Structures are given as structure tokens and as C-alpha cells.
Image 1: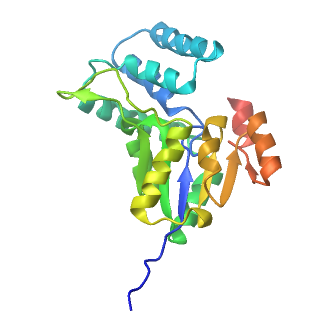
Image 2 (image 1 turned 90 degrees about the vertical axis):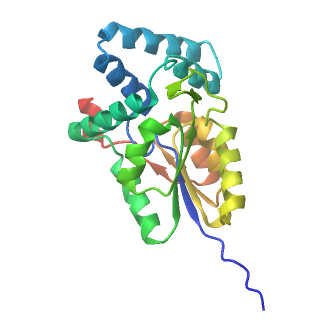
Image 3 (image 1 turned 120 degrees about the vertical axis):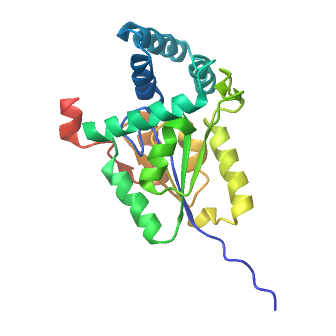
Length: 232
């Protein structure tokens, strides 16, 4: 008699503002520009440019694309090396990880669940985070490269519905049980992901997300300890 393969539960984690208490793309950009010898104003200018896009109502996927435009011509290996240095510095500074969420990662691992990071950030930033957490899979924005350098383009930013589509593809290939799975997120762009699983957890204090949590009966977790918020 042919046996039906067992479908595995998974835990899907947004990263920025969920697993970690900061936005990896911007923290790394600041670190990278300083390491390359740019003045602090270079980061402030780039950050304000992207903030202005958001304030003007530009979709988050487009601001994600605009972020990666600044990497045009950057060496892929050098960016990866800088990202490793950045991650070590963040760990030394403390309060980088949301310990509530890290504890959930460890619990899912003990239960044998597949741990998947799903992020609009990119692999250079996420690789040391995934390694530190022993995550199984990273689904993320993958900027285009050519001849070992970034082109400044990204075809599919891992934002909003793209997260849900990536999880659907992974579920089909990996025989996952979404009804038995859990998703964690902090931003409205995570809602397509959170709505896919049998259980969802909202992290942080976004008012729209808090209302969604109330409506659906999802747990609400703090982003970071109160004393850290007060200090920062």
C-alpha cells in the first residue's frame, strides 16, 4: 500500500521589525556608506529620498526597488563581507534581536517545524541573521547581478503579495501544511502572508496591524522591551 507523505508545519517570519528590532536594509546602508568613506550626509540624503517616496504614497515595492538602485556597480562579494561585519557590530551593540520572537523560533525548531525567513531585505544582510538563527530557508528580494556586481535592479521585491506567492510556491514544492503553520509580521505589507497560515502573530504597535489582530484573534507581541525603547 502506498503511503501518503506527511505534510510538515512551518513557521514564517518577517525579519525587519519582527525578528530584529531595526530595519536591516537601512542600518546596513548607513554602515556601508560610512565604510566606503562617505560622509554621514550621504546616508541622510538617501534615507530622506526614500522616506519622501513613502510619504508621497509610492508603493512599498517601488521604494524597495529605489533602495537597490544605489547598489548599481557595487561588488557582490564586498557587500557580503561588509554585511558580515555589520551584523557582528549590531550583535555587540545589543537589542538587535526581538527575544520574544527568537524564543518562538527556538520553540518551532524543537517542534520540528521548518523555519523560513520572508523579507523584503536582501540575502547579504539576511545570511548572517539566518545563520545565527539556524533558519532553514530565506525568501527575500534578490537584486540582479552581472559579472559579480549589482546592477541596481530587482525584478520581484519580496513585499506584500510577493511574500504570499513565494510561500505558495514553497508549500507546493515542500509539502507543507499551511493550516498547521504560523506566520509572524509587523507591517500591513505582511498581511498577505499572515492570512495564509492557520495561526498568525502580530509584532509591534502598528495601529492597523493591532486592529487586524483584534479582528482575527491574533496574539500581539511587543517589538522590543520597554526599557530599550525608552533608551533609543
